[in-house]
Image (cartoon, rainbow, N blue to C red):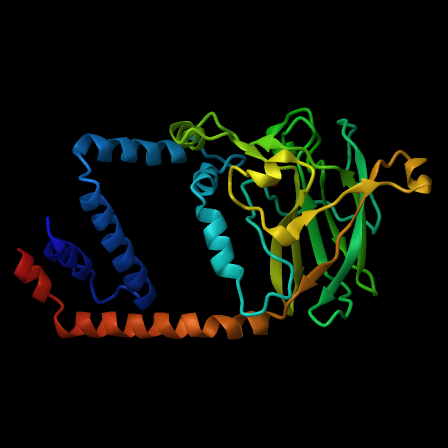
Length: 316
Ligand SMILES: [Fe+2]
C-alpha cells in the first residue's frame, strides 16, 4: 500500500485531537508504515511482534517494568534521556537513564549515614562530594536519592532476603553543599532476561550485563532535576553496557579508604561532585526545538482544517 494509504490513516484523526498528539501520532504512523513497507512485514511477522508487545505487559507488575527493559536493550531510553536532558551548555553533570528499579519514598538519613540495612556482603564504601551550580557555588538543601543493587545483583524489590528499601536512601546537602553516605561498591549485574527483553537480547546475540553503578536522583526546586548513574571505571562492563547508558563524565574512580575509615570497616572511598544547571537555562535551550514543534503542529492543524476529509475521499 502506498503513501496515499498512510496519508489516509493520518488524516483520519478528528478535530478534537490535540496539536501535540496529532504531530506525534502522525510521525509514529508514518514511521511504522515506512518500516512495514521497507521490510515487507508478513502477517506472521506482524503477529510475532504483537505477541511480543503483549508479553511485555503480561510479565510487568508493580515490581517489574518490562516496558523499560525492552526500551533499554534497544537503546531507546538512553536516546530519550539524552534528548530530554541535553542543553547547549555542557557544564553540568550528565544524566543517565532512570532504569526500572527506582522507588519513591526511600528512608531519609542524616549526612554520612549508611544505606546498608542488612549485611549482604560487598565492600563498604564512603561516597561523598559537593553539589554545586555551574558557577561552582555550593547548593544547600538539595535532595539526593541513591539506590544500588546488592552483591548478588538484585535490587531489594527483586530479593525476598533483603529488607524493604535496603541499599536506598534519601539525603540532603548541607549548608556548604556537601553530602555523604555509606553504601557498597556497586556490582555488575544482569538485567532480568527471563522475559521479552531477554528474548530480544538473545536474538541480537548480546549479553544482559550492566556495569557496576549507583543510581542518583538529584532534585531542587530551581534546578533541572538530574537522574544519573555513576560507573566504576574498573568494571569491564563499563565499556560494554547492555543498555547503552554510560557517558564519559560519569565514570568514576573508587580509591582505597583512608586509615581511619578502614578501621571502621570501610574499604573504598569515592569523591564525586555534582553540578546542577538552572531549570530556566534548560528551558531556554529547548526553546528552538519547541518553536519547530509548534510550527509543525500549526501546519498539521491548518492542513486538517483545510481538507478534513480530502485525503480520506481520495484514498477510499
Ligand atoms: Fe541499576
